[in-house]
Length: 178
Image (cartoon, rainbow, N blue to C red; front, side):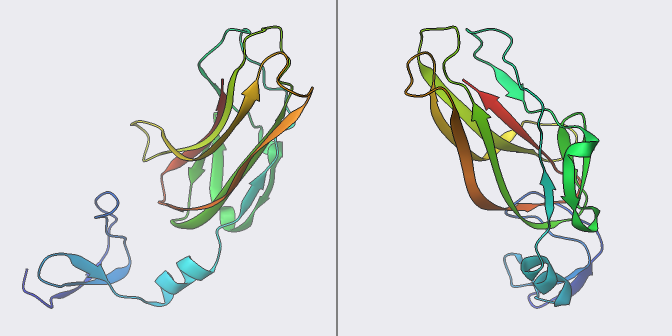
């Protein structure tokens, strides 16, 4: 394209960091497309995408020697707040309905004194998948101790607030693993 060419993009395309977002103006600077700030972009950056979910279901590992992932389960009634219908819950994953910057966080209360005397690390992760297929990628996480004698009967793992840019059609989920 000619340097300085101005276009109005009508379709999402590409993957981060080279993606272009629909309904934005871009110009070609000679080597890449550069987004022009407009009211929609400013609103995406300033207006937070908000939803809040709280699962009160007991999350169980299949056995004391389990080393895989356990997807945290949610039911539709666990969605406490979903401003602007930003997410849809399906099979314990959240489909992103609105492209934008999200602040994500999670926590889990757990009892580290299971039946195993082995000590391990308890991980809590928020993962993202782009579209309906592909690999789940960690976007935020934390870890603590797990196993008999790991200092107390109950613990809490907290994933600090993290800013993540999510596209419409992306999925996020919360997992725990030891």
